[in-house]
Amino acid sequence: MTGSQRIGHENLKLRDPKYVATVERRIAEQSGLAPREIPPMFTPFRIRGLTLKNRVVVSPMAMYSCRDGMPDDFYLVHLGSRALGGAGLVFTEMTCVAARARISPGCAGIWNERQAKAWKRVVDFVHDNTSAKIGLQLGHAGPKGSTQLGWEDADEPLAEGNWPLLAASRVAYGPKNQKPKKMNRKDMDRVRDQFAAAAVRGAACGFDMLELHCAHGYLLSSFICPLTNKRRDEYGGSLENRMRYPLEVFSAIRAAWPQDKPISVRISAHDWAPGGNTPDDAVAIARMLKGAGADMVDVSSGQTTREAKPVYGRMYQTPFSDRIRNEVGIATVAVGNIFEADHVNSIIAAGRADLCALARPHLADPAWTLHAAAQLGFTEIEWPKQYLSGKAQLERNLARAAQMALVA
Ligand SMILES: Cc1cc2nc3c(=O)[nH]c(=O)nc-3n(C[C@H](O)[C@H](O)[C@H](O)COP(=O)(O)O)c2cc1C
Image (cartoon, rainbow, N blue to C red; front, side, top):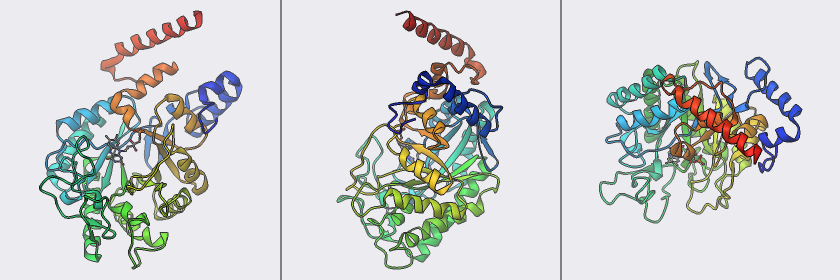
């Protein structure tokens, strides 16, 4: 399977069906199934005490629709419908550990018991009505906080009511953004404890997995990225020093989170800017995370500096996941412009990631996974019992369309 996706899983089947059958049987066996031909994306994946039914993840996506950090009915319907839509794992958006940790006034939080109760309702819905698992992404906006909603002037400060910001150094995200306060030891202890308290609340809600957001220029990312971390103490300078605070936070949440449940860490594997982190640094970062007890690295990139010049394309961040998974020996999530079932099958079959997270495709189609299964002719996928007549019709229509295409 080529990295460029010119030859993907389905195409390879046409060229060498026996080879693909052998690969599929092997992946099934490695996933704990009896060896058989099954699209790799529909094999289960086990990590610590968690088993996911397939390899598709609803990537964390901020909905900017909370008031005072409260996830309301919109969140129940939004996350609930995506959990009904067949993905193995559904992530919450970056859920903030304090009111002043938010990106915008619409961001979700888990800094008080009222919010935790509201999240428990979402978690219970997913567990009671679907076979999906649900993960909580925890984060602190740091220097990118106090900004407008995603569909307004995103990343720019509020017209009024701005709150003070914290970061590794006094480096503003852009010309109009506030200069954050450089965190002192007291700030670092307080924020670390806010993360740990949020993890305890998340565990009480029954979330299946935790993800620590260390990407995209937010607080923990501001420590890791050399362009935003200008410190001269033991938290700045070398990569080892820049990782020190994120690792302290990681250790605090690992201690607060149930031992049988996994934690992933989302990183920016490339700053896409001169003097920034590169994929080589990302491999070293992943090694440190693995050493600290992280179970998985969710491999994103960029958004750490406005100077970045990313090179976009299909599956454009997957090469970073590939390197981390195979050089460090840690499970990874690939994300970024993965939008076809064939992309997911090719990535999993080639061992470039363990899971694939899809964000925008799940905004366009909450049932992306169910529809992907139907397109692949994989009829044994479980649909919600309430929707079974839709499954039968879709599969019939797709089979008929395939026949017509053959005749034509
Ligand atoms: C509306 C929206 C909100 C997002 N919010 C978050 C977030 O809260 N946390 C995060 O780590 N990434 C966030 N992302 C990034 C996505 O998780 C994902 O990494 C990115 O969109 C690339 O995947 P895609 O090409 O499948 O959309 C967001 C993306 C979108 C489109």
